[in-house]
Amino acid sequence: MPPGAFAGQVVLITGASSGIGRAAARAYAAQGAHLILAARREDMVREAAREVEALGARALPVRCDITVAADVERLMREAEAHFGGVDILINNAGLGLFGPVEALAEEQLRQVFEVNFFALVRVTRAALPLLRKRPGGQILNVSSVLGHRGLPLLGGYCAAKAAVNALTESLRAELAAERLSVLLVSPGFTETGFRQARLHAEGWRQSPPPLKEMSADEVAAAMVRASRRRRRDTILTLPGRLMVLANRFAPGLFDAVARRMIHRMARRPEP
Ligand SMILES: NC(=O)c1ccc[n+]([C@@H]2O[C@H](COP(=O)([O-])OP(=O)(O)OC[C@H]3O[C@@H](n4cnc5c(N)ncnc54)[C@H](OP(=O)(O)O)[C@@H]3O)[C@@H](O)[C@H]2O)c1
Image (cartoon, rainbow, N blue to C red; front, side, top):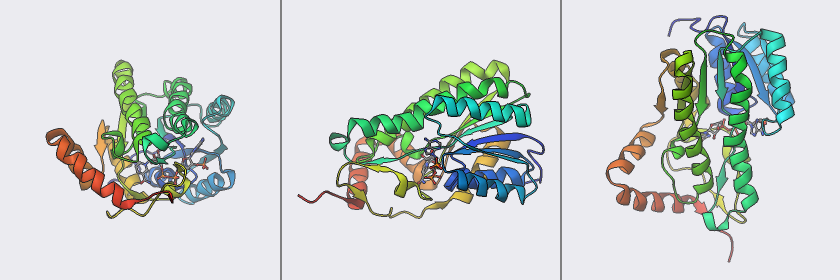
């Protein structure tokens, strides 16, 4: 990859305090971008800012809870005051949820939709005026392979990411005439703090996945490649791509395999 593919461009990343978002900040900085880093854990966004500054980028760390409208408005005001506009918005912040649909508290379902879906819509709408200040902007939404196929015990999270996928398609068509690209990147299992941070139905837990996990840096490299090529849809990992194919051609068989695999990873509540 040639150095400086994003030289001087401004990239705003939500969920930049850890995992994939933080790795993406380093990956875009290594390509010459400047970064706006948003998340709730202020100390960690500041650390992320120091990391990208060490790579030569300018960085604006912003404490922001994307579920709070006033925080998102302030984020955009600070972004505009600091950089004047945004070239690439990366909607990466996310929250997981584990447990059978029957056992999920409605409040948990709402929270997972609030972070993964409604807040993504809020951030996107607030960022559009800043994206329009630059030619050829991009919105990159981080979904999941689980947004392409519902799996047992992951229904709430799968549904929220499926909503992101559908919204991405609509937005892509709506913004095409303005030469604003809307991309979807769907990681598979990735080694981050995601499973520790996620919500669980009462008593339910999941042991580590049996499949090899990607690193956050590998996902970030794939995001940078998708951005450079303006690739509309990127599904990561071979198992992820096989899952989407198997679901298309043999959904019943895939149901049985998924049930066995996910239930083997689940720890149920004590009776
Ligand atoms: N890890 C995986 O296996 C995997 C697989 C497929 C897709 N994904 C997706 O990848 C994305 C990143 O996840 P990750 O694996 O890097 O997990 P992570 O390390 O837990 O990162 C999640 C990020 O989202 C931020 N966040 C959560 N709620 C927020 C809120 N209300 N306001 C602002 N920021 C918020 C967190 O920052 P603060 O806590 O500091 O706010 C954190 O930086 C998510 O969209 C996730 O669904 C992950």
